[in-house]
Image 1 (tube, rainbow, N blue to C red):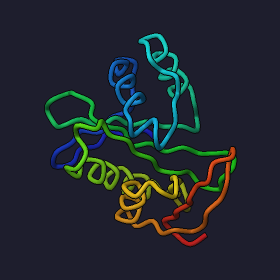
Image 2: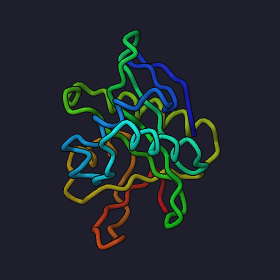
Image 3: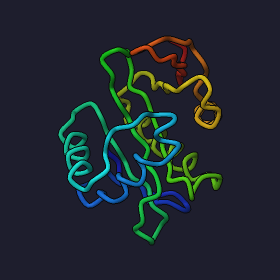
Amino acid sequence: MHATLETERLSIRPLNLTDTEFIISLLNSDGWIQHIGNRNVSTPDDAQKFIDTILNSSTTFYNVFELRGQHKPIGIVTLKLRETQPFPDIGFALLPEFEGYGYALEASTKYLAEVVRSGKYKNILGITLPDNKRSINLLKKLGLAHHSDFTENNTALSLYALHNL
């Protein structure tokens, strides 16, 4: 679900083709590589293809958040409907220099509230690596609770849910 929203400190908007440099920086940050994986996006052409794929998907939604009034992307909040899960999962990522200020929580809280308000989905999931403490803490602050652990593509993952499954 794409959304245009505002919080006290942030503007949230759908990803667009002008976000090339931001996507290169974000997808090559240590946190992204460690916790999400290498997407092999290192050139503007790679980033354009990555963005095009997302924009042409009916199951993956990337929303960029920026500091209000600055028009400089600092992070994303996402919603992805996976074939392997019954409900969509919320995700988030932030450029490392903006970590520790509560921006990911602020953007994710506002976006999740909008998703819930829309009534489109009966539940929202969160999927993370079991050792990704920052992600787990944020999911818990959003109101998601640990449901189970599972393995997908030889990777151990933890599943969180907004409501009991």
